[in-house]
Each structure stands twice: as structure tokens, then as C-alpha cells.
Amino acid sequence: MKYIFGNWKMYLDYKQSVELANSLVKENLKNENVEIAVFPTALAMKDVTDILQENFKTGAQDAGHPSKGAYTGMISAEMYKNIGCTYALAGHSERRYIFGETNKDVRAKIESYLDAGLKTVVCIGETEQDRNNDKARYRLAKQILRAFEGLNFKEGQIIVAYEPVWAIGTGNACLPADAIDRIDFIKSEIAKYSQNIVPVLYGGSVDENNVLSYFSEDIIDGVLVGGASAKLDNFTDIIKNVLK
View: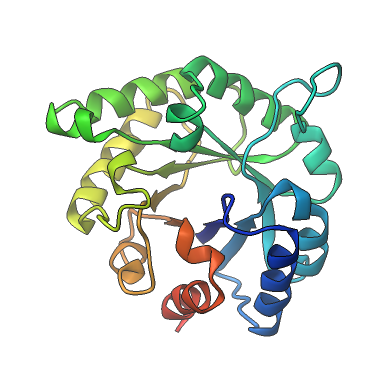
């Protein structure tokens, strides 16, 4: 199984999200060998999930780690699970570097997602400073350690997305050879903490023109697409280029 995930971030409002979901259904993009999921705004999650249920999976872009209680503004993993979500992102670089989430915060979310029955997409990646200072592997190893050490999970419950921070939204996608090298390293690091097979996706300025350069590599288990997934023509071209 390979994966195409689309993170709609905060690009689309409720109406636009529902319109895109309805348009995607009409494209007939199902394929038994490729799982497709989108991560819409929380405002549209229930309707998008209902619209796409026979075609795509859906996931939360983020969720609070307490299951319920006096946590103003939070939406828990359990709440997302109860409306039909399959996945949730943990540790996306925008959560880490804009909102200040630590490795400890990410680990707490991973555990809460697993407890709620959501499949967890753990996002990791080095910054441009890490890259320039030859610390990319150090950063990835540290993030993997904090996410996986002592973690109890079953095969199929976790996917990792390698998203170099310097490539996200910049148009400066990682060279396929470099992505292969990093993902090979990531898989070897994960193997230190678990014998379960954990798929690893590439994300960072993925578009219809470069998607096959990643997707066609055996070691890369799919892609996590950002801005391009929020545009019907771009996202359908990405999917069709992979499925044809």
C-alpha cells in the first residue's frame, strides 16, 4: 500500500472545503493500491468526511491530547474519531515552529491519538539551519527518539511523514536522491525502537510535476501534499499521475 495525503491547512473555509470534497468525489479517483486521505479544517470535518466516505479517508490537522474536560478551544482526538476520521497529524513543522510544540507535546499527542483509535501521522524534519550545519540526521534522530522510545503501538497505527522544514511551501522540493537517503535513515532509526513496519512518506513542495519522482521509489511509501492539495486541478493531477 502507498499513500497520497493532502493537508488543506488553513487555505479553505467551510464552503470551499465542501465544494472541493464534492468535486473530488466526481473524479472517481479510487484505487485499491493507493490510500488517499485529506486533512480539512475542523469546521468542515464532519461534512467532508461524510462526502468522501466511499472514496477518501479524512484526518485531523491537529488535535488536543486530553480526551475531554475544561480545555477551552481544544478538539480531542476522540471527538474526531467519533465523526469518522481515520488519521491525525502530530508534530507538523508549522505546529512545532509557529506554535512552539515540543517533542514532549508531540509524544503526548501521539499517545492520545492511538488511545482514541486514530492512525497517527508523525511529522518530522530538519530546518534549514540544521541542514546548513550538517545536523539534519541529528535532528531527525532526536525527533524519532522522542516519538518512538517505549511507545506501544501495533503495525498499521503509525505513519511517518518526512517533511524538511526548508522545503515546505517554498517550491524548493527535496531532491529525490536526498529524500531517499533521509527516508532510509529514518526507517533505520525507527527500527531501533520497534519491529513494526512504519511507512514513511515524503512531504515538502510536492506537486503534479515532481510527485512521480518520489512515488516511484520503493523506499518512499507515498507523499504528504500541502498547498497543491487544496486546489482541485493540482490535486487531481497529482493523483492521476500516480494512478495512471
